[in-house]
Length: 59
Length: 301
Image 1 (tube, rainbow over the protein chains, first blue to last red):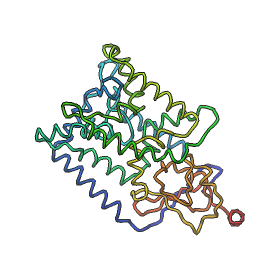
Image 2 (image 1 turned 45 degrees about the vertical axis):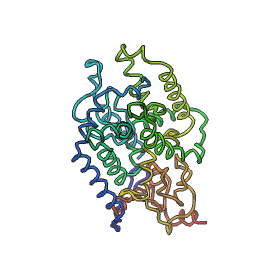
Image 3 (image 1 turned 45 degrees about the horizontal axis):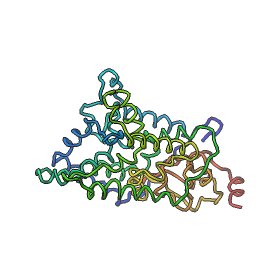
Image 4 (image 1 turned 180 degrees about the vertical axis):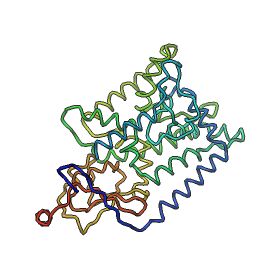
């Protein structure tokens, strides 16, 4: 790395892949897919397309 | 690295708020992109918002959960929680540091010259209370005569909603102005307080009150992207702690729920390869300079 030029060295080293984040990712992926199966995105889209009066301090 | 982070924050700000035809259309963006989750806190009632706010959406689903179940629709927040969890388990609070529009606003205010103060550490528990009470428990349990709850966080606390939606929408829609009363004034005052606090302290809302930061913070110790601390290389010089904008003892708790992964400790402070960014088990070390042996010895002494 050359500090004068402000260049940052990026070195890679192989490590061990932890299982916990992968299990969590799988869990949340299942939740995400379950939500799609239940047609929740349509409801979210409907909400997001309208003005949330509470969010803007009215109502 | 700090300049790169700033540019990425700006990029995310405009990706999350990319609909600039609103002065012509006179309303907020209503296209299909709004089915996508904004990684950071970004009000979906902002006229330029192109994505949905996970906190706002989760509350809206929870406050109406009884009615939707009665109607045979199981809208219990699985899609929104799935989006939030996928982001959290992958990035943790890296999102706060690199992709949150309201975080960027606070950081810009913090650049205003003034005496700087720390955020008292006990206040960091506030955001978990906000997440539990204002986002989940109260919308689910305090109901009106029709069985509907309130979006407590959005209505009574969220300054991002006031800044990104409250002010622009009232400018854009004059018809709404007569309806703006005490609640609107209260939220304007709250926004002003948060912004003034941001001048004196680094990202105080994120650290004390943000429920999305609290949620992502739960994942910091287990997310795919983490800070890795190598005790063998540490000289206990304390440079990482001094440079940390949120005051973490990086050598003691590199994956604290408070860390927003600005990476200053890796790129500006540690010269001894004691800190590195780990992505899915692979270390990416971004060191400011390789310390020669004499410096290393000095640091150890």
